[in-house]
Image (cartoon, rainbow, N blue to C red; front, top):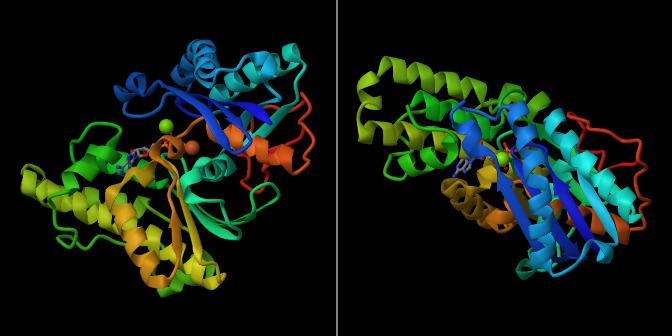
Length: 349
Ligand code: ATP
Ligand code: MG
Ligand code: FE
C-alpha cells in the first residue's frame, strides 16, 4: 500500500511516504533552532512550528515521491507517546486529510515506529523475529522484545528517570557545552580517556538486578558528573580535562546501554539486536555495541541515521505493516496520548 505518515510528537515535523517496505520520501523540518536558546524543547513553540511546517512538508514529500494525494491508500499518524500539544497538530492534520480524501487512517505508536524504521533499510535484508530492540533518544530509553512488529512488542525495561539523550544534554550543560549536548559531548570525548574518571553505572549492582535487570537510570550519573566538576574546576576549564570527563561520562552511558541490551539477548536466547533513536548517532555507542555483540554472537542492525531520529517514514512503514497484516483502520475517535504504552502498537479509537 502507498501510505503517507505524519510525525509530530516532539520537535521534528516528519512527513514520509512509503510503498509497502519501500521508502519513497522522508521530509523532516525541525524546530530545534528555536528551542536551542531555551536549552530544551518548549512544547508550545514545537506545536506552533508543526502548524507552520506541516503543509509545505506534505507538499515536498509528495513531490519527492512523485505521487499525488489521490494515489494514497492510507494516512498514518503518531498518536503517542510525545508532547500532547505537538501530537494534536499532526493528528488534526491526519484526520482532515483522511476524511477529505476518503482514505483509511491508522493511528500508531511512536516507539514502535522507531523499530519499523528498520524495515525500510533494504540493504540490511528483512527484519527477523524475535529481536531485542534498544531505543535511545532525548525522550526515551527502552529495551523491547519484539516478536512481531504488528502485534507483539514486550517492554523489558526503560529508564526510571532521565532518558539517555536527556543525560547527554544535561551533562553538556554542566560542561559548558551548547544544546543539544549529545553531538557536542561526542566531539569533546573523541580525544579523552574513557577510563579517566570512574563514573557510576546506574542500576547495575547485583542488588538492582532482581527488580531492574533491564531498567536504566541516568540521573545519578548526571549528579556524579556535576559533583566531580564542582570538585575539579580546573579540569572543566581545560580542553584535555573536559575531554576526559566527557569520554568517561559517555563510556558510563554506553557501557550500561550495551550491557543491558546484550543481557536481554542472552536471557531470551535472541541473537539479534536492533538499535534506534537519535542517541544511536553516538560513535562510541555504535562501536561498543558492534564489538561486544560480535563477541556474544549477536547480529546488530542500525538503520541509517535519517531513519533513527524522529521521522514520518517510520510511521508510514508501521501502518503499511499493519495494513499488510490485515489490521482495521482507526476510527476518528482517537486523540493524543502522551503516555501511550509501547505495547499499544495501534490506537483503534
Ligand atoms: P523522542 O524521544 O520522542 O524520540 P527526541 O527528539 O528527543 O524525541 P531524537 O531526535 O531521536 O529524540 O534524538 C535527540 C537526542 O539525541 C538528543 O538528546 C541529543 O542530544 C541526542 N544525540 C544526538 N546525537 C548524539 C550523539 N552523537 N551522542 C549522544 N547523543 C546524541
Ligand atoms: Mg528530536
Ligand atoms: Fe522518537
